[in-house]
Image (cartoon, rainbow, N blue to C red; front, side):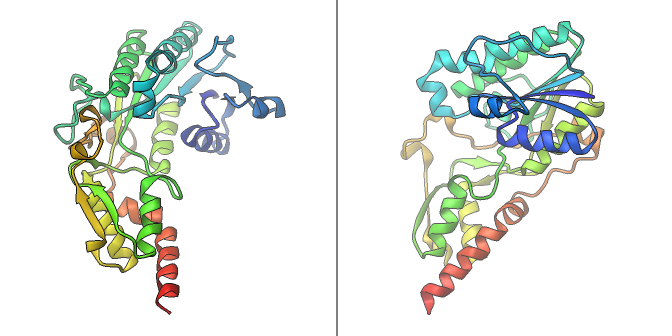
Amino acid sequence: MRCLIIGADGTFGAALADSLRQGGHEVIATTRRRHLAIAGGSFYLDLAEELPSMPEADVAVICAAMARFEDCRRYPERAHRVNVAAPLALARSLTEAGARVILLSTGVVFDCKTPHVSESAEPAPRSVYGRLKAEAEACLLDLGSLVSVLRLTKVVRPNAGVLSEWIRHLGEGKIVRAFDDHRFSPLTVAHVVDALVALVERGEGGIYHASGAADVSYAEAARFLARQIGVPSQLVEGVRGVDNGLADGDLTPFTSLATTRLSDLTGFIPPQPLEVLQTVFGREISQAKDVLAALAR
C-alpha cells in the first residue's frame, strides 16, 4: 500500500516508516525539520502552519502531536491547531480522496481514576492535552468508517526521560524522589509499531487501545530499578505529586486500558509493567551497575 506518515521524524513515525518499508509498502514521510525535507526522502509539513496539499495515499497515520502537558496549557491556541484543527483538516481531505486515516491518541482522554477502561467508555479528560485529543478523536470519527483511533498508554524508550535519569542517579548512589500517587502502564515503541502496522494492513474503523497489563506508580518503578541495579530501595523517596507541583488535571492514579479490539485483531497480550522496564532499560541498568562497582573500588 501507499502509506502517508504525518510526523515520520518522531519516535513512532520513524519506527513505523521502517517497519512498513520492510513489509513492502511504499512510504511517504512528512517532517517539520526543513533541512530533512531539503535533503530529500520526505516533504515539509508543520501542523502549526498552513497545510499543503496531501499526496495520494491508501492510508495515512497521524503521529505528529503537541503532547507535553505543560506546553498545551501554556500555548492553548497552538496546541489546538496542532492537535485538533490541523489533523481534522488533513483527515477530511484524505478521506474525501478515499484514504483511510489512523490517528494516534492517548488514554488521558479519560479521567484516569479507574483501570482497564474499555474502548466504548465515554471520554472524560481532566488535562488540557486530554481534552484536545478527545476533541480531535470525536471530530475525526465523525468523518466516517475510514477513520481509526489508536489510544496509547505511556511509551518508554531507552536513554530518554525521567526513568533513565533515575537509573544514572541510583547507580551513583544518589537519592531520587518519585511520585507514589501518579501511575503509568508502560509500553515499548515496538508494541505501538506492531499495532499500527496491523491497523494499516487489516484494521477497521473505530477505536483501538494499546496498553500495559497494569499500572505501576513512579515510586514503585524507581524502587524496581534500584533493586535491579543492586542499591537499597531506600534511595527512592516516595512523594505525592499533588504536593510537589504536579497539576491535579495531570495526575493519573490509573492509566491502563482494556485492549479487546486490538487483542482480537492481532492477539496482542498487554505486557507486565516491570517486564517492560527491564526490557527497555536493561542496558542502562547494566551500565549503572558498572558505575556502582567502579565507585566501590
